[in-house]
Amino acid sequence: MQKDKKIKKAWPTKAAMEQVYQLNLWGSNGADFYSGEGSHKDEIVQPYINELVSFLESFDEPLVVCDLGCGDFNVGKELVSYSKKYIAIDIVGELIDFNKEKFIQENLVFECKDIAKEKLPDGDCAILRQVLQHLSNDEIQKVVRKLVKYTYVILTEHLPKEDFNSNKDIISGQGIRLKKKSGVDLLATPFNLKIKEQKELLTIILDDCKGKIVTTLYVL
Image 1 (tube, one colour):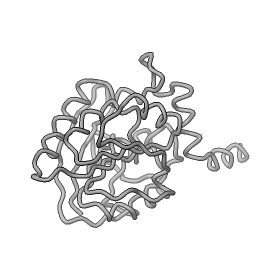
Image 2 (cartoon, helix red, strand yellow):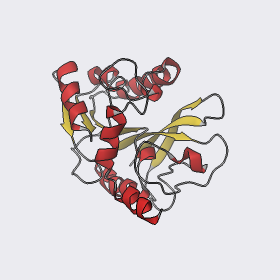
Image 3 (tube, helix red, strand yellow):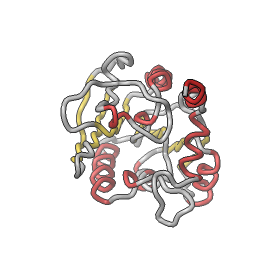
Image 4 (tube, helix red, strand yellow):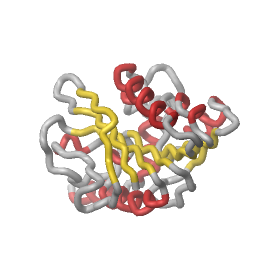
């Protein structure tokens, strides 16, 4: 058992996320790549798109948006036209190659990067939609240190419905902290993200005790 634990802890995030798509661990709708219900269910996706479009349209000069963990791009494709430049990033190389062929717009760029290990592109606004919830505290901390280059960070996380102890650690992969009755809070220890202001943009309550999906705007 101890040996198995060591193997799991050493399992790279990139390999874990590649496996998610190879084995359809988040489900499948017949597409080559599928990022799960959170990226496709209308009652989750459409309110989110409405809020993000409203935010992006509020600027006289369109923003450069960095989508950190773009997945199958079913959501991001609806935001590109409201951005000066849209940089969509994911850790899975085959997924990025697929997206490059499927989604083509003049102001759209796809990049394959590990956001915890590699330099993030410059921009005005970073989007992290149900991404950090899959990462260990160590990897989240590495991402948080890089977020200071952005003026705006829009974070979406799957959280318990009731009060919870935030930021319990997990092994990076397909699972999230909900099973531990926890969730990611970037303002709490150990991340302690420094912000100027925050605004809750959207909360979607899920059925069957599956928690809630909360989208928050941070101004850095």
